[in-house]
Image (cartoon, rainbow, N blue to C red; front, side, top):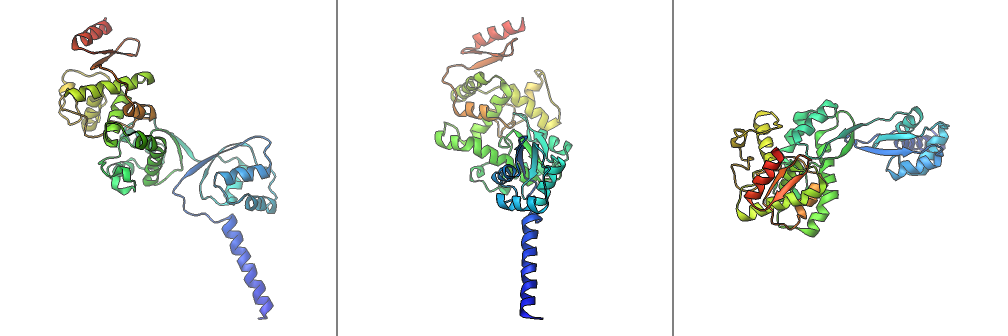
Length: 327
């Protein structure tokens, strides 16, 4: 074989490898999803830049080269969810055939890890047992702020996410922990309240369950902190609901006197101090309420007929508020 022929074959092979890697290679992505909005009237150049800005497809010129070589002129506007690491070929195919992809998964604030696991399994994202096994294994995740944590309950940030079917449970939890770190940890490190991170999250989980009204949450947090300071039991009904569900799998909308005697370390009617772990996964408002409670001398609160809480300083005031609510 002549040297020039061999060189030509080598160059052709090299070009082929480059083209394959550039347009068709699909690195492992764990199912991570990136959202992309393509407005009507977008040109190929605009779409290429939008893809590159979302770290999809590489450099805009590479994307434009593929569009030119494949004569693509029918890219469609819309809302898309792409798997990070998808090759340019697949991205363009989705844009021409209007393939949206990805599944929207929403975890409401206050959801427990068991509820999150059920949502994931129902949507075909991952088995509930895989998710829950990792919830009980914080050391699996390399986060220094989890060093003293025994369970990830409370740190699985509730939000809307996009995952592909059969996504690894480890990636899902990593995504939630990353979201928790981004939205709260910097604030916590800067302000460092009277409680540790673990206790702040525990308190926030109780606040989340006790009140759905944003302006009340710092007051609810202050009541619990005031009771802790005075050595009073917290007597949170939400902790009893969680305790019963953990042991029996049953949810209680209304608690009986017998329920309040339910034997569990999470029952704050029976045990002193905070529960041993969060009783759900609080949203940012409850986390901030636990970190920034208002200064008050309230020791009691009761739910009123209008959906808000009446706060009181003495047990007698509390009884009066409770009687007024019962009327």
